[in-house]
Length: 581
Image (cartoon, rainbow, N blue to C red; front, side):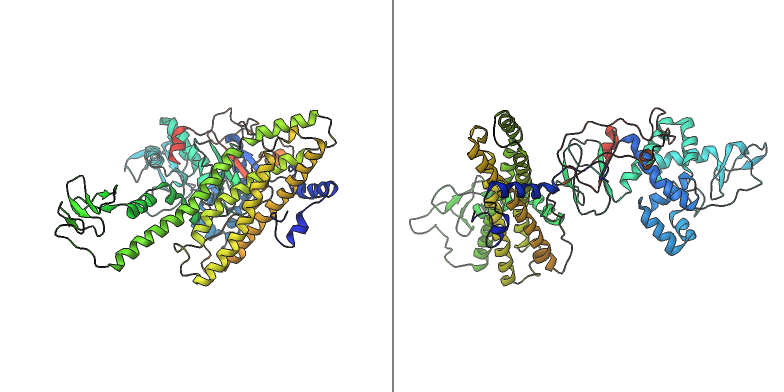
């Protein structure tokens, strides 16, 4: 077990007997148990329950400030659906500041204006006399004819500005009543009214910094909401795991900036350009890259131009054994040699990290197929009359293998940028960089050794082994599962405290490591449902069969472990909305 952990750590995590391994497994898996529904704060929200989720925030604001629903929505949209921030502004700045900043203007009703009155009024927009029952007065006090309002609303909705449609009056920043907008637009363009309602629903996702669409391809129609920290990795019910901060696939221990650079470096032509720089020379006539395929240093381009491979200068076609006719380039040019050597060094360094990153990604894809094989092995073992009855150590080891392999894969892009010159050239001295690189690579190597051993033991045909051999495999899998988990935690702590934590610029942060794996969302239950109250139909513009807490849900992929602090919004959005994302 010397390869599992070094030094004193080995004594803490190595079980030498079956009884000790049983105790270790019980202790190790205490955090791996599925969370109960009562203690899980993560929520899955369908299109219908999204309305209920919105109303929970709306109701809090409406009850505190005694407002109508559309006024509360205006405040929440302005504050990006952050209820706590809205309340903080209310306490610190007062109600007047809160309302004016959000464009919410409330004036008393004008006693001279009555929609049922037969009198005529002049619309200041079209300058026509219109009966008062064809006029509409907004909360700000401005009154215009319905035709002008409808035209104004149509333009704004078409332009995609329907979440905060302002009053038509000059220099008036008041937000129009959404019920009035819906009523006037639906009379002539019901499809546009539906679009308006959809924009209001989408505002809960698009304007909420704690909610983001799942970036899966093809789009699953879901969105994720996190309760506390934006810097986390979450798993959608469709099975896609992604970084909530940057919406790319889960990439810790890489920071978002590192992963963006690595992703671009792997997918664009930057490394192709490096290869061309190292292995080709530009033709001095057509400037196309030319690769030498022989030993002679007199090279001819496809355009017909001959040039010297050593210096790249144009020459004639004739040459002797000792020199090219009319050409000599024996003088040393230091700058060009340094540039070529640097390009070669950068290319080989990139290839070192990329090859290992790609190798572990490929191994991870192959190990994904182990799930079905492991289930078959466990099924066979359960049918045999063995002393062992509990085989949860197999699935536990498999999940630890998946998580540690992923961490190991992304540790190579992290190392590429952490110890290179692209990001932190001025943050560390050469000596300090070497010390930190050795520290990190030692941990990385230990993790790699134990991950490979764990993979080897799980791939063994232990369903065909005798009792004592199965027991030995079991002890090894438990030891290695605990070891790789400990090493992953140590690596993350090293990155947080010794590497990224010591930098002056705190822009590179990583999602925390979780023994239980990446957070997975669960079902949403509104507070009223939890209290046993009956669901009420939705009246916000959706079809009448939609309810604010419909039990209909999209199919979910089955999973073993669930984590808290995330919410999944499950929306069946049309293609045009999805494409706009």
